[in-house]
Image 1 (cartoon, rainbow, N blue to C red):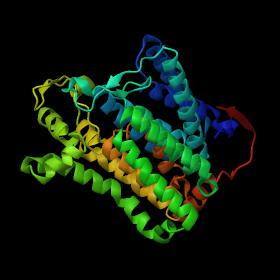
Image 2: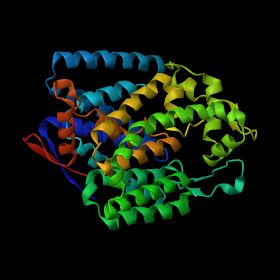
Image 3: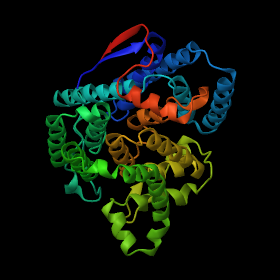
Image 4: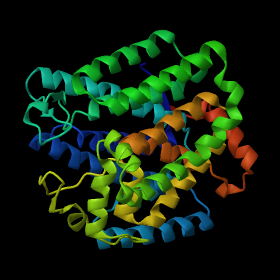
Length: 409
């Protein structure tokens, strides 16, 4: 799974910025220490510096600059109001990465997850990072048996391994090795025993079945058109269903059963919604958004309500209109990989994972956002040419020669 990644000289600053940003965000999932927090801040500063250099290296048409500056200023205004600059950072990375070879970000992401996870495990075994025990129900003292293995929560490691496998399949596709697929599944079974993360294990089980069925029977490919439609609209459907669940729960009965199955995610979202309200665009500061003081049903005091549903998190944190950005991403990705069944399976699992976790504004989903906007027809390309270029690029072939640097991760 190691890659000798060759990058063009003109794209070097982007890849350096991407590596720094990805690692800094990954460190946020590791058990927090002074050293890790300081390293994360330094890496973010380096990431922002490198990406600004990348933006000014390429020559852009005046029309492209006008669009970028306008969107950047709008997101910057929002960031200054709320203290959340994620939008400005994301816009800058999208602009800087529009014409890069898009397979490289997936490969780099996979290598960072692989070596980063191994480093966390080694540090945990050596005693430098604690193995925090968490519980599915914090009101039951004896239920604190779920291991975090150096991360801040027991759900992190299984999800990291899930995304690692998703990246691997997206990179290799028709060259998948059965041995590695089975190794991923065995690792998830072991993690299920240690971390008791039902959602990650269920997603990996479904993913393994779909991948093996396609690789050895071709059965899934026969329904490629159906998968394309599902992937194209599943993010929209999941967003609507997640939003509706906050109101359907009032009726109880069957809807309570669904919420219990998902560990009370939607009920917690109701508490958050009642406190902050619903907004088309939410201009609340990060501090005000996070500062909860809520008594749960069992009289447990919640000073921070964590929304473990990516769609509800976006709707509640940024506003109802913000989810349209991710709807657009799902449409772009589905169209880009309309005829690639392995990529469609990967996207389906990614969107399903965000129904039970919040990765839409985190490092694990970042590569997919950049992938969606890569090679968009701002330069006069037709949609068909963009699709052909994207498929060629993701296959690992370069459409432009030039001096390259080797990045060993």
